[in-house]
Length: 297
Image 1 (spheres, rainbow, N blue to C red):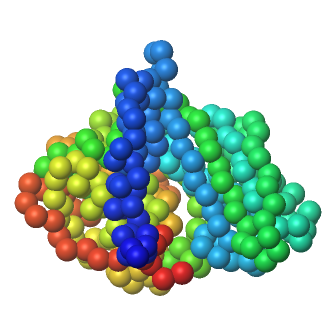
Image 2: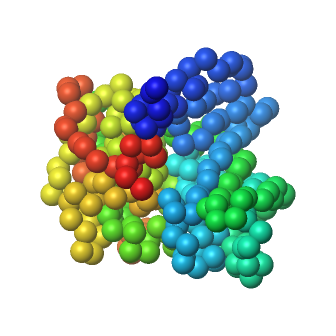
């Protein structure tokens, strides 16, 4: 009997979503960071994400940081579409033995993230789990974006320069619990430049860059020695560790020089690195990155 582990995450999603009904109101459906829905003159972003104990955080992780991560992941996806956060619904699945203090700290972390970056919790659901089962927090959210600022994964063109923000790799050392969703940077980028394609780096550059290139109908070439690495991280870790939650985007080559100059003036403490380009030819060979059903837990 074939299992989801035999298939892998992307093929599984393709099979599950291949026969779904479509609607005229849906501008962007499955396969991007968020769904995009036409709602009168505005565009609504819809996103749901989950963090699971033992997969996304260890049992001894501070509850406040787990809460921060749970909502910051959704905010990061809003940013990856050029948007901003709105309302969130929180579902928590807990065993009866879960300390009340842990749950309160979880919500403190969520609230602190939203106070800094926008968005409000408007409801949700609680449910119980059998004793010893791993805790799960699921966040469903609605954001918004104007048509002018909307960026998808599929708009890249051959010849585009490929950029990443920040430094990659080594997220397991703590960054995955305290990262900053790049909402401020995206607001500036989409105000001043025409980005072609964009996503956030959650599964590792080696997994996510091929996804973006494929959806744009392009190949890619990268300069591995240009990949910005976190202190102590190797090139392989920068490619494969995942959970960096930095931006990966493309822009026309003629705009790249101006972008780099103006970025350093606007965000002097956050690096921006051109790591390669989209091409019409076959892509570089990249392996690694996170897959929920084939990567070892």
